[in-house]
Length: 376
Image (cartoon, rainbow, N blue to C red; front, side, top):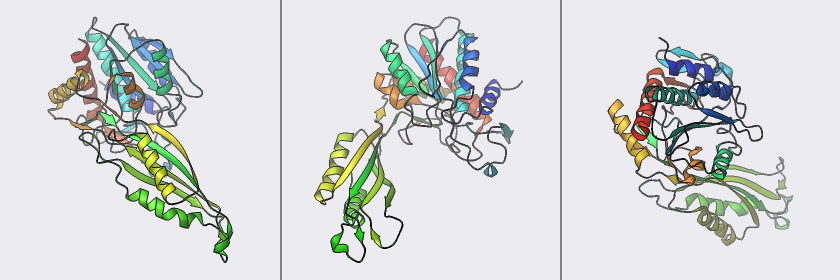
């Protein structure tokens, strides 16, 4: 018999849903969940497709959250098989989204179907929150859906985000939080001039180097028991007119903080701007908050997840706050217990993205066991 989770994963992978194009993934999912008595609601915002599907109306509300969009495939000659033609080779399912995160979405759906079929009556409700905007700007996706749900007083109790959180095998690691992300767009103003007459110009490159070096050497905090220390990285510097005999009039730089809950964005902004002032620079900074840090403490969801993984895999799970950002950052501020649990992230966003067939099947069992512990 074909594995239900593998067959559904294949159906999703075949749809080239590069952000923000959903390519029919959510329609397929909606039709399937409707057969299990989910009330499915399309919630588009702009060009982004979002799906909210709920079974039941009582508390507690357990939500599976994820995304149907994927990153571009990149050069096709880097792929052994076409990225949107799923293929199984040596026990692995290959295709764009196999691990990030169409495989996870499929596992959630199969687990919910299995649980509902086995439990005609259960305590609480199950819902799915899916978006086609997670790999993109993340403006009109989960963030907007959460705002809409809050406006009508639908409160999430527990949420599993199906991101590829595991390390070597499914269940060996889960995310219990994420660092914040703070972006800065810096402009240093100088005065353009001829390189032969530097006394008549102000070189923004020369004037900015000491300040940028100080920022790169600054210890922002020491982190804590849950998060590593805050990091600062310059990702782009641009200046000049493209010729060798002109001192540029300005310098532009992009930088990013990945910060823990040991500090705040306001503190990071103040220290950064103070350093530029101390070096006498004429500057402007545009700040953008990509995410605020969140942390889920030990509660019913985390306990149920640890127990389910131990019972089904005999693994003692590692709790992590590493990695980039996820849509959990929009859900956690509502007061929900949020974790991320999925397959290994080893090939996410790579050519020949893949995940073990056995890990997807095991993930279905883990999700279903968690539902049993929380809702039965």
